[in-house]
Length: 220
Image (tube, rainbow, N blue to C red; front, side):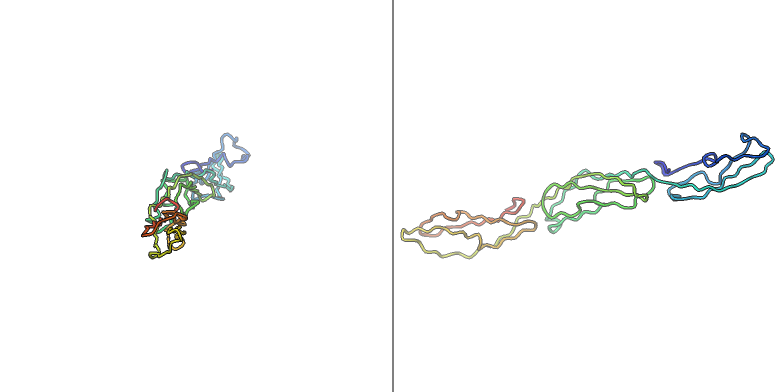
C-alpha cells in the first residue's frame, strides 16, 4: 500500500514462498528482487522477478505479482467563508471548486473536486461541502459558509395621479392602490405597501400616497 508520501517498498523476503537449494542452506541463499520501490504511477498489478542464488553462483528466478494500492484519503481544505453580493453577479452566484479550494492535497493525485450546493439566487448563509476525490476513489470532505447578500433596492413604477370623488359627507376612503404599481427586484419577490393605508378616510383636497416596494432582503 502506498504511504502518505506516495511510496511503497518491498523486499525479496516479502514475496519469497519457501525457496531452497539442494546444497546451500537456506540461510546462505542470496535473495534479490528486480523492483523494490513503487509509487503512484504503479497503482494496480505489477510483475516482479525474484532471484535466488546459491553459494555456487547458480541463480533461479520466478515471477510474482504485486498489487499496489492507495487507501489514504485526500486532505480537503477550503476557505473558511466567502461573501458575495447578488448585485455584483447579476442576481446569481455560481461557485466552482477553484473558488474555495485552499490547498487540498493527496499522496498521489486529486482527480476531482466538487461543491454542493454551487448556485445561489437568494440572500442567506449557506453551508457548502467541498468533496475531494483521488485516483483511487478515496474521498474527503470539508464544510464552509457562503454568505450571499442582496444590497440592491427593488424598482417601482407608481401609477399616474388619481382623481376620486368624495361621499355625501365630503370624505373619501382610500382604496388599495398597490396593484396599480409595477415593482421588480433582482432576486426575490417584491411586496408593495401603501401609506396612508387602504381604508384611511381623507378630506377634500390633494393627498399624497406613498407606495413602497420591499424585497426579500428588506431593501426598499
